[in-house]
Amino acid sequence: MIIPVTAVFAAVIALLMLFLAWRVTTFRRKFKAGMGDAGDHDFEVAIRAHANLVEYAPIALILMAIGELNGVSALSVYVVGMLFVVGRLLHAWGFTRSRGGYALSRMIGVLFTWLSILVMAGLLLLNVAQVSL
Image (cartoon, rainbow, N blue to C red):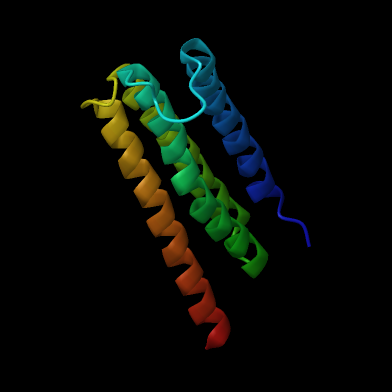
């Protein structure tokens, strides 16, 4: 069985992850730092923006894939995927723009990220309850 909706979002998230990794690599080359942030705040922000995506993407994509495989509607998985991607874009942009400080876009991004994970987890529980009963 294929999971085309999750596959599309996995590809989009992978592209965002590569872009954020490229930003970190640019700082690594600039400061000739193989590890750490060389004491530079903007370098630290780039590292954390990338790491934050790496921390959230696996669980979101796993939940989406399980949902798609278990028969959660493709539309539901798509909406959750869009919410997650928009959330991650807003977070990365706001976090970078504010240099790790407060930014409304960052906060909305976190909210969308958490909401997408919560909704997908809820859809999985509902799906399992329907199949089990």
